Length: 248
View 1 (cartoon, helix red, strand yellow):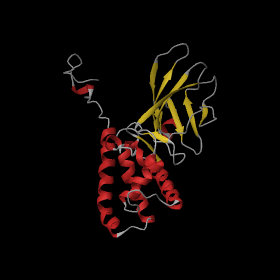
View 2 (cartoon, helix red, strand yellow):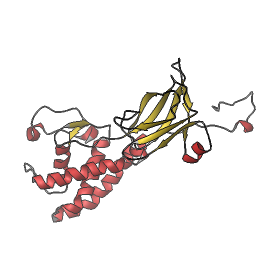
View 3 (cartoon, helix red, strand yellow):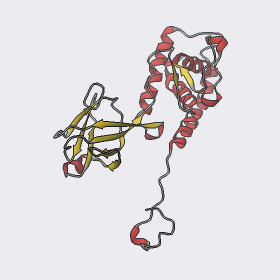
């Protein structure tokens, strides 16, 4: 998978897709082969494929709660209304977008300008204490965003939300995955599905290696998503006129 996956156009038909582009059926077939459920040229039973498809989307759903499995953030600008401090957040709501697992940071754009300023994402206690910023109440299926101070009209709130891997809608639609996610997803799916499968002795013998490879590939994804913070020094410890190269 990822940069190492080769699409079998003879088996599945059609032209080779770009590296990192997969359908659920392709992933499931590879998992069945890894677990020795299938031999070359065989196809799986519909019931087993459906079970594995459910496991696939459950793996993706689990990853959506892990910060280091989030490949990117979406930046979306939402207009604010005069004298309106709360906004529902979800498809068809005041902030018409997907409800993300988490809002990482926010920005604020004053009326009549395009310049964005940092805007704190507050905890509930900070919001209740009257701090300036936005508080995101993560209800389900829709969230609610509270803005303080109350907008006067014409301002905009910028939200940087987790953009997670989408669930597969069906077996045959192909999805483009970020680098390294394909192989991590394949091994994670094999581990998730193994308890439901009737493994051969060879499959049982392979399972510890598959589990170890699943940890390795998931760890590779997490390491690639780590964003080191810049080093800073307490201003009280350095001379105001001599910063010694430390950013403030």
